[in-house]
Image (cartoon, rainbow, N blue to C red; front, side):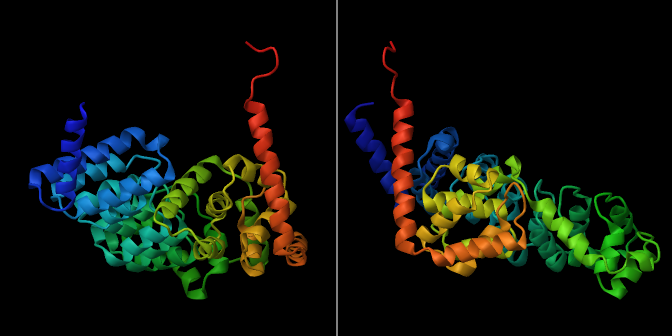
Amino acid sequence: MSEIDESIKAFASFRVLNGDASAAERDQLFRNMAQLFSYVSDRCEDEQVIQYDEVLCHLAELVEVETRTHVANLLAPLDRAPGSVVVKLAQDTIDVARPLLEFSNVLSDDDLIEIIQQQTEEHRIAIAGRKHVGERVGDAIVENGGRDSVVRLVRNNTAKLGDDALQKIAIRAVNDTELADDMRGRDDIDWGRLRDEISLAGGKVLEQLSLVEAPNKGTMGTVSAVVYNRIRNRAGFNAQEWKVAWNQVKALNDRRQLNNSALARFARFGYGHHAAAALTLLLRISPEVLVKWLATQDYVAVTVAGKAFGLSADLFEGIVAVLPWRDFPAPQDLKDVRSRFETISKEEASGIFELWRRHAFRKSNASSEPKAGAA
């Protein structure tokens, strides 16, 4: 293509972005940009993704529902997609939003909860059928949803249902035979443990639904052990959880919302893989480095990095407590790590971290150079 042709094409795009083009031109540009991004999404630099995001968000305001639906279908299966336009389309009418709500890994739990609270029951039904539904998202559906979204949530065997949500669903199921049957079909739930941890009234409801027998006195007082075991089961790096977390954190970073507040939310809600992904991006280190720290239980490296970045002691301790370590940190480990964090100065930590970074960079370059005598 000649320079004149390129200039004409660029001018045409400029006209579209300024609203001076026809509806057909705007629709076509929106489709073409989304299609192009789908081809190159795995090779885009962060700044390129941000540029796509800004233009697509602007165009989304100028095109019709049919075109927005087409683009939503293009973006839904991508592991990496422009975060702001994905959220924008996920909050659109249900025909536009559905593929993103059901399949996009870019939407975070916070995004989904906001949609659950502010959009329609059809939006909640779509979210309830996602492959990955976290406890907080399930809680929000039960709190805000109607029967159809709750039924789909219960039937989704991959959805994680918290104790409060299960208790509320059980109360609904007392007068809903179909929902009660769906609850009985969930073989992933320890109903006996749930009875021991929820209210007496809730326990009675579970008995009424024939989900549990009357409590045995010997099973009471074991809540602490059960909770501890559940926490222990969270430990360990999981590749699939990491992939989901990485995509969501990258999207958060694209939207310029990755900061200490995001880290605090991850720590508060126990999102260990999200916290690890966030640290990787904020520290500007490779994912392999942070995963190695977790696998080798390298508290010193994480402590130095956290101090150098300028985290507060409370936030740092909260993050260390939820990271997907090989072995879950014991209370004494957390106490020792915090003590070390408070002892080292930010200047000292920054010096150590930068020295390590330069050494790692030189080592990486050396390994990429051809060996003597190589062809």
